[in-house]
Length: 298
View (tube, rainbow, N blue to C red):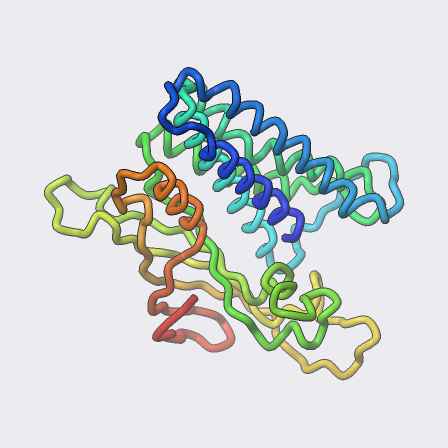
């Protein structure tokens, strides 16, 4: 999760750098500086990531790992979400810069999987990690969701979103799940929920009275996880016993892209904010407790 958010951080730098250009310039004059900023962000991001994460660990020959069972697959959804939103943002930037739509779709849409595959390759040469085909498949699923919808509908009717709420589990293994709020937001998979947010009106006739901004959302999370594969905590034999449990959610959401604005910068901010699911009441289903109603879920 930390590495994925590092990539998103550089994507935000890319957004700010691009939109800081002269927005009244002709579109055909925006493309070259936009590509220059994108290239700089990619090279800078990968270089910074290498020195921050990998130089302190021994290197090895390229190898793969199978980590598909880790964290009840919550981490894989994080990969999908990152690839989806990187592709979506890059596509919007390239269109804004004047690149033809189809070309922008393939180049921008694939940027998420390119960024993340670069990270996977770095993992493959580190003895502490390895190239994960499960992660690669998750990256491709997020990219495919974005590109597929643009090809089919020329819009995003189904979005991937994220929400977070602190849990009690991190205190029992802070080295893995985080020792403070900032770390836990990144590391505690018990606290993360990933959503498929579906715009209702986009599937109905134009004359439908359903609000254009109203979505229904289907979420997935998990609880009771103190470590990646089991709840064994090194050096701590007194941790409570928890059952690792999958959680499924149904809720409402707001499609921020349906909020019309005349400002390109404000539209960009709404696009960035669309990664977060808007809090609403939610119904949860899990094997341990059955059905649970949350008056307010985030």
